[in-house]
Length: 598
Image (cartoon, rainbow, N blue to C red):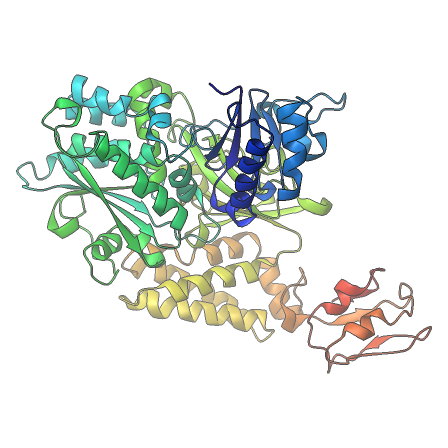
């Protein structure tokens, strides 16, 4: 038995900030100080506060250290682990109260409104230990299904729970499973697939579940296999997720060794096994038919529907496909019941939703909240507000397939139907916050550039239509647009939505549609005034020195690479617009705010 456990985040975010080196030195220092029989170091998945890495929590005190560096380790070991004195300078600032007491993490703004279901084990257990997963009720749900429930019972509990697919479409999970079981009852083979491709810019929800709790996916896919009558599963995951892939491989092998994958699982006649298929990062392979085509070893392109995969999917056989977050909810629903899950969320959107919170926000990271939580609560309470006192402007949900939510809708409860009603969508769960310094025309252009690159090219409306849409946006942001161009956007968006083959093309115009709907004044300013109100579009900017603020120090002159600034010490400075390349170096160098962009 160990008297203390030090949990160190081993997610991708913390790895990028050096957590592997911190863990290595921590183990060495613990051994050097003779504490290796008393203190255990555990690598976990993501705690959620990704911008604060490397992160560690010391139990049983539950003290949360952030931005820990290798140089901090001797002090943590000697002071906290050896002498029991907390190193306050490294504590997460929100855990420190005004009376110098240390608050529980659950009482901080970031955590107190969260409710972890899909992320319940992330940051809590060692993801590479099947024993720790079993100790947290792991594989109990699978055992219950195989020994106490019929496949129809399993499907009914998922139906009654109200769980909808967390991959973006929001289709009822139980209904999908029911169709796969009933449509082709005499099929000689059925498959269960998992979409772990996660191609949205700024999205890392599924990756974090796989890195922190891979056995939850293994167990849930086995349950799905039992429910629909499948004995084979495939996890389609992008090769850019090496940590997630490695931990999933370990989990699958451990499950096989424990008899939880393979034949005669729990001494029944049920058999099920899993394989991993690596994707090359194509966004279109998030579409179910394109994903299955890629698993089959062919070019990842979508196919017309119907028939739907539940009838004719992988290799022409009935197939169930859900994403990682959807599966991560399944074991808890089986163990705690449909009513428990349905008690969370809203009438038509049950349960919780994981979001990757990023952009202009103080608390960047991974959050899981009950459906129906307002955008204001996410931004200002969980997210800690906008940095530098800036004003909230919009939030982008759903990535390239979603839309922008303006300030006028900040109090809208987040669920599937509400987001669609205001011109956005849930998507897989990326949530990018924007402030007054973001140009909404530029945001639309950014997402269109992404979809143009990611279009598979199979259908003309998407291949050509998104390109033309992007070209109009480029024309507007470069100062060459006309009001006729703005009017064209609406018609082109409608055509692409109505005629594209798959979800990529059908939703690609959403960023343009939502920004036109809520920020049309910015489009008009770009066209009529030849100005970018946010000061982002460089072709429309002019740099100017405010004479009253200028100290005549020549700091800006020295850093200008184009020699566009003239002047001398104690003499008036000016910028020649013809020479200025708008690199922003002078603005960043000036300490007095004397250079403005107009």
